[in-house]
Length: 189
Image 1: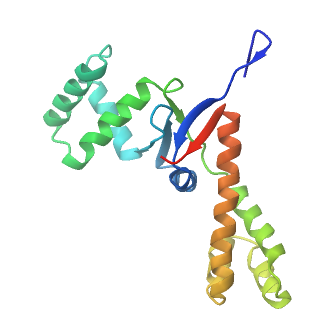
Image 2: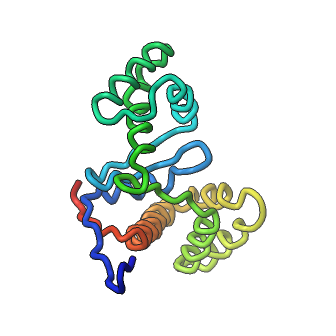
Image 3: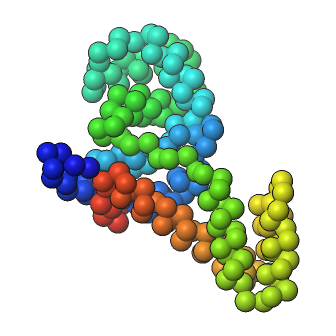
């Protein structure tokens, strides 16, 4: 983040770290998530909302903002007979798209390699060598994550430790991403 040889100060954003951690884990093929740099809120946009949004774009002028945009979107929603639960989500999605990169930043999609790496790092922390060997043997091949979780059910204390370990690993990725985006988190939202 340099401009004319100077490093820009990070943008301070009030965030709810637990919400960001959850959002990092839930993003995927059918769900994109965005951080509102003004409010710190995470805005989810599903594939269904994207589909409806594209239909609405065909019905409203492209130069509207603020309350005019909201009114036009609400009218288009009403005309389309969209289920009521989608109303606010559609307005949010159109708002996000209109300010992407300025007010909203897209959260990255999870990298499946991170989950596998988390499992292997966790296994290294298991003190019982027999259980450590069992976990090591189940993480190879297709379905490794499911077998890993199933094996953890046999040891409730290790299962709880896994959840805490995994959450901390995701928190680290969230902090790295915020840093890369030039965002200084202020927790407490």
